[in-house]
Image 1 (cartoon, rainbow, N blue to C red):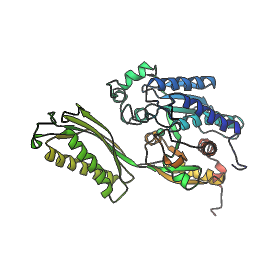
Image 2 (image 1 turned 90 degrees about the vertical axis):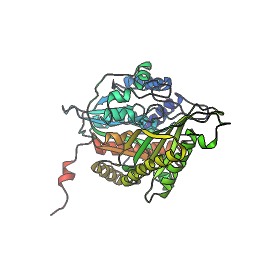
Image 3 (image 1 turned 60 degrees about the vertical axis):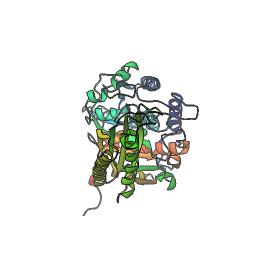
Image 4 (image 1 turned 45 degrees about the vertical axis):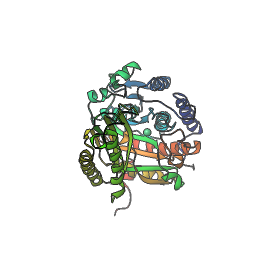
Length: 430
Ligand SMILES: [Zn+2]
């Protein structure tokens, strides 16, 4: 960090301390965290965050899908314009300490740092309010679709659809949020810009020994829940030709999804991460199976082809196994380009501050992708050790967190400041 340093040592320590306190909630014995959306642990960390907001003079708002907003006044321009910054505090089952939580911790401390810079006259803010956002159910492990809170906030799904999403026990998101007291009814300020810091979840930054990345676009995704219906029967006497084995059909489809990816000409990642089998008994041929299949690609036509090929495979497997296969839920996430002006602003300020960076794409979905549909949205990455995430092994060093926070403050200062007229109008065009 050079002579253009914006963050103080105390602020960088505050980020680490806040992250450490988040990590204690839902901590697992192997160093990870389990904080499923709207679980007891999620309720506990939400209470902690709201208490932190109140201690630091933020106004707290909770909307109808439990998204939490901590609002700090920066200026009195009178237009109520709001700069949003945040991430999520829910995790995968036995997930990592950094995914989402680092973005929220950094946003909390950055809000205070930015207000200090405004009061000192170092930033002339173009926004009235700084809003720290903590989105509900980003991970999609308990309630689908993933990014459910920001999807409802940006009208990509209705609040009613989000709240009626069920977990495996049949509990709805609305009921789960009510049980932890986070089914709010506030309407937060309209966002005019959104900024998110997140761990990379790949090893690109570490491999290039570079502290920060600016994300220019996201990969698209196709997520399908496939229902397979066969017929239960005895695994012993039933003649092979009479069997309609739902688990066998599921196995064919899992292999086929992998083959579709391998045969694609453009990058196309796929997996089946979850399977449910009924009656799930060793001596009964599986009567039904549900598969969660997903494809991801930077190329929209590859995703369209993948969907066509998956549908073809379902017909073939139905003929082969005598089972019925049906896509009961399909979610598509388009390839999204982040706001190009904001990307350029961040690159310019990092260049000016001598901060080295990579331009990147994100394969994983982030709330910033949803926010881009309603306002300019900016996503930055910090390194993930060996690219591991959704695991207790997930790790980002204190040094990388400090460098990331410094890069974040530069980016926020540049994005929040009024455009400098002398820079815009000056120069030698003559
Ligand atoms: Zn995340």
